[in-house]
Image (cartoon, rainbow, N blue to C red; front, side):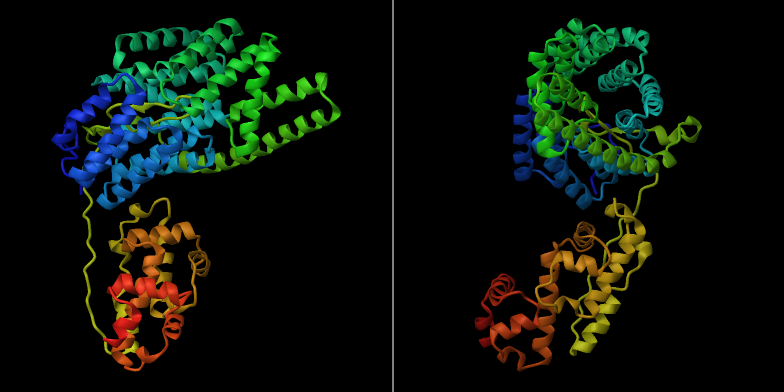
Length: 544
């Protein structure tokens, strides 16, 4: 477990604090990213797992979209190893945020709900409220604007009353940016006047957050666009584009989309066309885009209706239908996933006790938020539950049977599953029943010597277990600390060891026959794996 989680100081070791401070205080996002990669290298060489965890958290928050999810996956793997529940929840939140930024709304919805569930179970009020902001954005994208507005208002009220540090004030002002977006959409422009002025003032007075200022420029530009002030909106949107220090794909796409919309509304079709064309091509290539970008396809149907050939008109209609199909599919999936959130979410503050609202600091730069407000939040907090979970360690059992039948019996005893001792939270998003079912299937698979099946693949075994390969692989990894291939190979060599003890003639067979009986796909693969395991070739080992 990570020590010092309840402290008010950073969890990272003191020897790395100077480098972390340089990352935090650097005015250039690109420079901060380069420094964070140095931090990863240094913690790998000279730090502990908890230091490397922090390094990945920091880097995930400022890395380009193409790399950020990989860092988030690393956070999840280390957090699971450390059994740090809040870190696991934070990694799911980060993955969701980055998924949102590359328009993978399905994954974003799934992982935001999972992270919210973690924060509820940990009584982590700070991050529970932060999550509302992200889920509110999702609800707005699928057209549930009233629900989105209520969630963002709940977040707003929480941070309004919890502004202890400058970073808390940053979070509060960032919530205002979200409120500006929603208010623009539902035509509450009067409220936006005050909010816009307050956010500009905050950024002017807090220069260390300056590379996030493009968010308020984008929000202000969208507000002007909603008011029909296209020339004013265009100036602010172009300033927002100039303010982005490191390539931030989704925010660039959102800014460009509204720039194109301004040109279209102002009648400047020649400037709008190439921007819309780029958005359309990206969608047709990746099958992903923002749900807000539907006017792009309306633009082309209108344009080619006036200026195009019949073939171009049909093609533009087909593109529009393709987008509509994508939009319908995403909305249905997100709505279904957010039903789980709606069941768990409670807005009444009386459900929260004073003890549940105590929290300590956990230095990080890993709050990854959503389109069009991708951001890295410096200094996020870890709230520790009052009741700590005991970590149960599995006892090592070293039995040496003399008969294969005895091997089967003892394997059954060893693999007898005590479900009361399983920490199911480590397996999320897999539910408890599925975990139990997979573990039971693994027990049967091992005691029945199913691993001797010829050239067995992960996909085939997952089908036998009535699950999917992703879930099976994860259960094996968390339960045994192995990959599927390692799990299968180890079982086969355990069987071989016992077979050599009970059948003196077994080793006299040809290598090809032994390989086949152990289930290996080829003698070559068997020989390679054998040498890695025993340090000798099969022939050398058997003849010794």
